[in-house]
Image 1 (cartoon, rainbow, N blue to C red):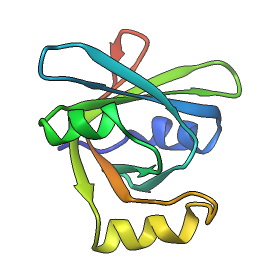
Image 2: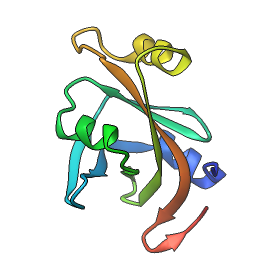
Image 3: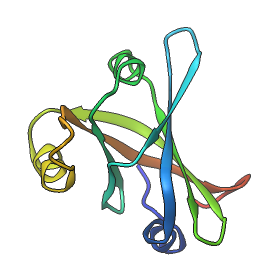
Length: 125
């Protein structure tokens, strides 16, 4: 496991728009979604609320790794890759329930455990 470099952690706080979350199915076919209900839990974990996952949830249960792509206000992009934990109870789930809008179901907390961090083709961690 890795942590977000300070530069990327600060960039996360300046991101704009939704993130793009990508998983891969058992046949290697990618699935990308926009996600707006997302939070940096700590420097090793980014959480996305599972409000309406379908293919994404299936891919997670099949053991996929994932990536999150985000862009900052100055149009710098960052990609974070890692393993995935899917939690329907516990600290990550409880925390997600505090910030996920009540109009959404919040079925689970999808936690990306950071292993690699990039800006463009440059690996930062």
